[in-house]
Image (cartoon, rainbow, N blue to C red):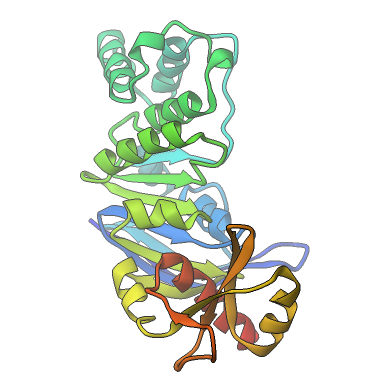
Length: 294
């Protein structure tokens, strides 16, 4: 089963064009949807989660028409939005049991077995009687995955899941998503390049509602081979270099800005060739889009 998005467009009442003719084919496994804040990622996720209507276009999950067969979609969908509400004064087990009822798991014995298995899977079984208000950020996200997995979904949508997590919680969440992604389609929507690089075999970059790249991260990186150059400069020189070169990124290293420049040939004295990474792909694609007026 694969997910096909065909020419989806969405413009809000305030005139913001969130999606502009988005077309994607998403196979089983982990799929990264990478873009800056405001790129249109959440709009696309909400449409696929049947929470928002597009202005035009189509989407199919296998043979299911996602825009016309919403009930069928919800039966096979798991969704973890950026922020999800819980009843803070009840325990994780009580909350998951309640959500399982809403998901249609009415048999009490089956529901108990499902809830306990999911809490075990996300490593929260030992905390099953703890109130959700006492959960850390990472625990809340793992609980969010547990509720999204109710009903054994074929499509799991995860929107900006690692924001605010500490490194340990983030790694545990990575491992959990990787295990889930072996069985179903998992769409990971994020602006964090590292998330996509570590988890996803396929990805797309979206900017201002348009798809700038779709394919394997490794292929996108290979396209930049020999075209990324770096140089350590003074802080006072950043503006001059940005005016003179195609600077795609700048970050402090040992207190000095280290700039990455996109160029077919050596930009000049002091520049060193640098092996590209996915962050270079991300910033260079957006720079090219801006230069083209996209």
